[in-house]
Length: 257
Image (cartoon, rainbow, N blue to C red):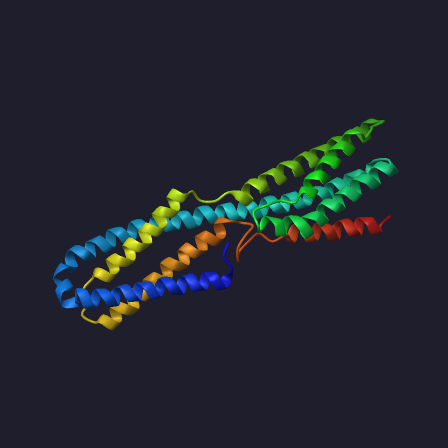
């Protein structure tokens, strides 16, 4: 994904290309010759602009909703190892220590390996190994009374939830808008800007400013969609704040022993 500087460069390039097109159009087909067709062009710009605005608004809403879901899922995943470590307080000393060490190892791996790896559309094998060890450890825990059995059931539920949130995060990290939707967005932006350039204005400089502002808005919208579309990549991405807080909570729990 692109960084902030590259996003700005793309926006600037689209604005420059739009201005260059309008300037070239003014040479080939001057304003006074386009002005008689303003009724037809104005109707076209209105219909095309309204349709494209609806499409862009829907796309922005969709990718932002998915971004918020990814953020919430990451927070929920970060809570699970903390809850698991706290529930492990009801296990025997050896099992408690093993589960809590694995929970801390999982959080540390998320911060040190997994988040940087997701920015490259990959995942850390270490986190998968720790999940497997947690499951193996939890299935060996023995409950000797009803209280311990309840505690074990809750711990297994937390581990199951953590596995589910992890799998969902992996799917969210690699998901993106289909190519056909990007084609609609790009073709729609080009058609809208070209239609605005075709309008015959009495003041060319004012027309130039209006086209530049339209190109800026459309390019910013497309860049925003592209950036938010990948929730764990780019300039705007889901931060590992939940895992940072989880590490602090696990360190506090360790300090109590």
